[in-house]
Image 1 (tube, rainbow, N blue to C red):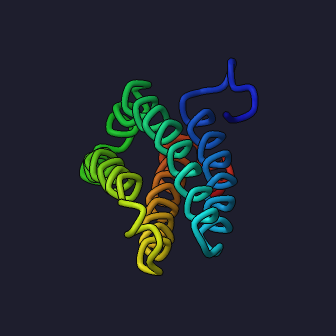
Image 2 (tube, rainbow, N blue to C red):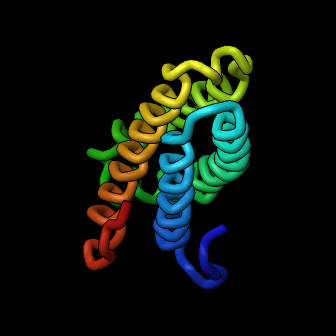
Length: 145
């Protein structure tokens, strides 16, 4: 998981987790370029790891009080906070759909393309969270994908 964050604020922990997720997304993107049954198995394995990490990450974001803090400091951002939180379950469901694809589906070019599209959506979501965190909670923290 991310580097040691035991004394970090919820925002700092979230940004560190985003950096770790970004690295994992890069590995998955690279794996999605492979061809053949072995490449599909490797990609599926990466998606299993991502599912576990992403579920824990989303749960941590929602349970840490981070979005409550943002809404308290910037009530005008309440809608964006709600939108970001609402996207979590949908992204996990989309990821589950990719993970549950049959071997026949995994053998088609559409499956790794679907994975890449999911990764792009997830990266965009995390980027929006980073921007919100740095803008509202600490303008001096540098946003990173």
